[in-house]
Length: 221
Ligand SMILES: NC(=O)c1ccc[n+]([C@@H]2O[C@H](COP(=O)([O-])OP(=O)(O)OC[C@H]3O[C@@H](n4cnc5c(N)ncnc54)[C@H](OP(=O)(O)O)[C@@H]3O)[C@@H](O)[C@H]2O)c1
Image 1 (cartoon, rainbow, N blue to C red):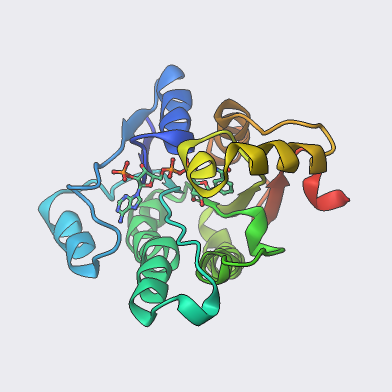
Image 2 (tube, rainbow, N blue to C red; image 1 turned 90 degrees about the horizontal axis):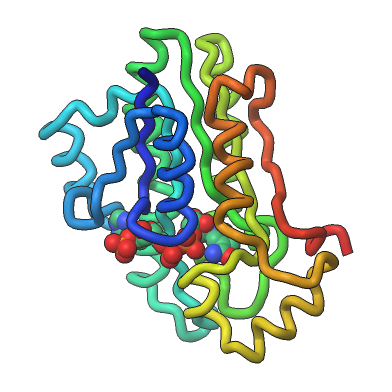
């Protein structure tokens, strides 16, 4: 049975990705925020030494935070925290999870990025920078691990109907956003989960190093 580790599986997109893998019989591990605090490198190290949960075949780096603040007002500590959760943690998890994958000569890694890795908006400096970094990390990891049949991709959702979207946008802003999305609605976590499942399962045999957008056409305008 294939084992998959999904960060940020408590809610939103991560929760639905976890359900998608469970439904078809994967052994799914979704550490809670308390068990694995991705803002703390010590917590990540402790998690890895306390259990063998990184003996996984599939790694989904999904957890992330977004601090909406213009550059002038964003503190170094806030910048650092977003970069640690969204970029440094996936780096450390990839570094460790690939050890098991290399031995078994099979692995799939999906990094959940964002359309804000490719474009941005006022107040998203740390989030955009972290996600652009995640795309770059994806490409390098894909090259370094291709020999071991470890395929690494990034998925960039557009506007998906989750708590994160509702926290960062007023209902009025969401309605305005929908008018800018060619399909005229937010995406659903299920739509993202199906796409991530394809890339992170046996179904994907040849796609690697890609940054794939799922956004209802938003980026094509
Ligand atoms: N929603 C969108 O429209 C959208 C668009 C583009 C990209 N994305 C990306 O999709 C992914 C999921 O987004 P979402 O909207 O589902 O997010 P969400 O609802 O805000 O959930 C975020 C998840 O990350 C976890 N998390 C946050 N900080 C953590 C930390 N320090 N340590 C461990 N876990 C932590 C949360 O755990 P707790 O519940 O314990 O806090 C939660 O499970 C993210 O990478 C996001 O950037 C989302």
